[in-house]
Image 1 (spheres, one colour):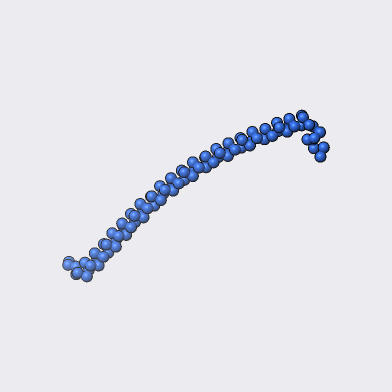
Image 2: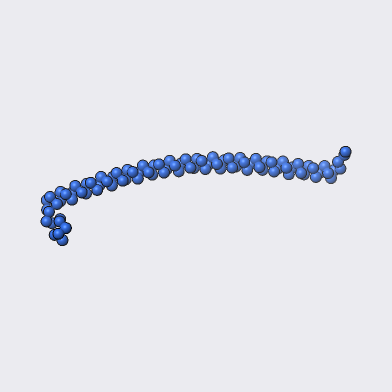
Length: 91
């Protein structure tokens, strides 16, 4: 069975559309894979940042605890030197 030139043209256009759709689908899949990889990398960076921030917070808390202990020692020394001046009742 011979196809007319119009039918040949229609089949050619259909084949081109299907080929383009397949190519576009492939590009979309590659793009999604690249986005996933980028997101995974970004998540890893964010997790590392969070870990560093937690470490910094722990360090600051330790420093704060040390400062509180220093203040308590200094208050004790002041009370030993001048108890009447620094007692709450003197106010």
